[in-house]
Image (cartoon, rainbow, N blue to C red; front, side, top):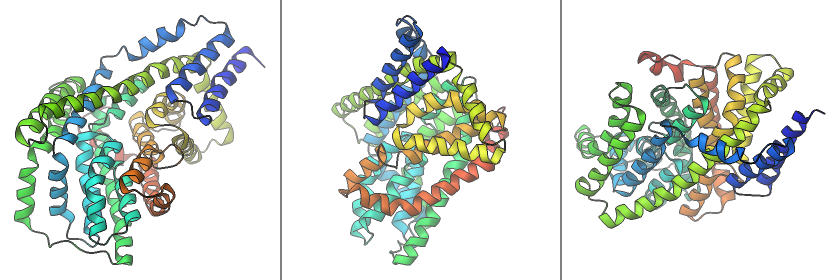
Length: 433
């Protein structure tokens, strides 16, 4: 066995061992990198050098701004406005509140970009509301946590920025455009599943559709939805970069939350900023340590070896695509979203490109796979949040979520084998894919 193979075993073996021992993910990444460097006789100063290099990026400045924007808007009374808008649009259907939950998540996801924030904010309002109107608590929770994953696909998503930075040379604007249709497809898939269950269990309908009421709620929600327009239209139109648009959106979100909707006081603003700092510290330490981990992967030629290993199993593009999804889903069961993007992208993206999958399409696949991972034990953060909000055992929520897992997997397969779903909008707006 060559020294390179030994170092690879040390790197990956120690990493997964620490994951199974429930080490904090940043510690697991950093320590496995240290062990790898020591096994090769390299200077440990390489670790901080690569960590600094990993976060020394102008594009990554968009991440704290998008996180801050999401927290400010989520704390500023936006949830009620978006729920009312969704209710005016789809509340008339059988199982209307389930549909409202799903559509509201699509709207809210475009503001927060976070499945956890979506579940905590909308779930605390909609789950009790659904239970009061005769919906089962486990069903209500399952709808809430699965629909929250729409927010990962709908821009502005800081996870898209992380992927674009990790993949190198990928346009954030193209990724933003690529997420809209997959996010809508996921919403439709979940709505179909919810409708079938609602008919079977005879869940109630809402009030009949009223165009005047819809217009009223649309105007009331305009200030919230405009935050997304500032980011997306500005980036796609070339008015400013993703980082500049995120900074402008933070100022806009602050003004709207404090002075227009008045859902935040200045004391609440400071509290929201505390939350932002906590979240950002977690994200940046993961990015920094993962950069050092990625350096070891590259120097050990792990991406090339992984490609050879996967192709040794089969050279059929369909089988390889399914294997890529399976690997990401398995990683999602044991790791959080950001580390998967940071660690798996350099390894699996070359394999995906070798079978004709665009980096942009693969980015959407990675994000949805990671989103499904957020709903699966033992590390599913959104699953835990949903269970806590609903005060239900995790096992009961998982059982109720099984039909929705199927809806999400169908959506994932469509995104994998129908590239146009992800690529049509970026191509329409002139992005190279």
